[in-house]
Amino acid sequence: MKEKVVLITGAKGGLGSFVTPRFLAAGATVVGASRSISKDDFPEPNFVPLPVDFTKAAAVRDAVGSVVSRFGRLDVLVHVLGGFAGGKTVAETDDATWEQMGDLNLTAAFYVLRAAIPQLRKSGKGRMIAIGSLTAVEPHAGLGAYVTFKAALTTLVRTVALENRDAGVTANVVLPGTMDTPANRKSMPDADFSKWVQPGEVADLVLWLADDRANSCRRLQCMKESSGYSLMSSISMSRSA
Ligand SMILES: NC(=O)c1ccc[n+]([C@@H]2O[C@H](COP(=O)([O-])OP(=O)(O)OC[C@H]3O[C@@H](n4cnc5c(N)ncnc54)[C@H](OP(=O)(O)O)[C@@H]3O)[C@@H](O)[C@H]2O)c1
Image (tube, protein in one colour):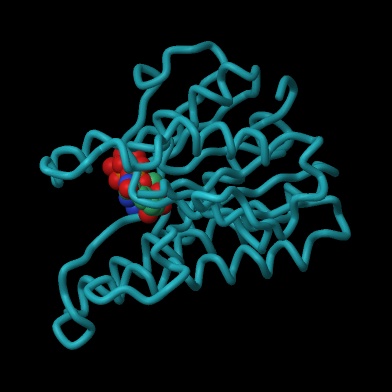
């Protein structure tokens, strides 16, 4: 990853706090973004904080532009940012929840992809990895807004993969099941944490997908079941019971 410039959205959240250190340790120049982020969050010399609200199109365009102005390139985009809401049927879902789920899980991805793709194409080995959700593979009662926009995210990224393979760009979605994050432990204290996906494993996979050698992983889906992996079009991670 040395000499690579990597932009990570949601860089200091439950998963981002594993992904960002992986890329820092691999020697990349890491631009870590969220609404509130500072150098203190990752005090390594190769970390650059980028405060930006990814639901604002102009701010996202300017943020990606600032990365390219400063470093002259963008090689990897890791789009970790997303948001969760559940517990309501479709009939009970209010406008604000629907809009928030759309903004955080789909529109933000569109904004950052639109801004980043021309730079990833110039990289020659551009890499884009988004974090979706295993729940998006099948409909889930009570998660209508979340799974709808996460499913659309997968389609968006697969489309980007098709549109940019000519420039050596790969675009993949990782679909984790429930992850073992501090926020999940707090909100589900009685759950069996051992059944949850370790965010460190997701971070390892993301780092691997960003590698130059992951050149053929354009439309890969590893459905991780108890029996192992099967290849489809993006990557799902779950632990068997
Ligand atoms: N946690 C799970 O079990 C789980 C399971 C499957 C999939 N996922 C997906 O995995 C990804 C990461 O989940 P997570 O648990 O790490 O989430 P998280 O802890 O809530 O972190 C989200 C991050 O996004 C940032 N953020 C929120 N709104 C933003 C905005 N408008 N603009 C810029 N940054 C914003 C937050 O920082 P600021 O507050 O500073 O902006 C935070 O760093 C998400 O896409 C999620 O849907 C999570």
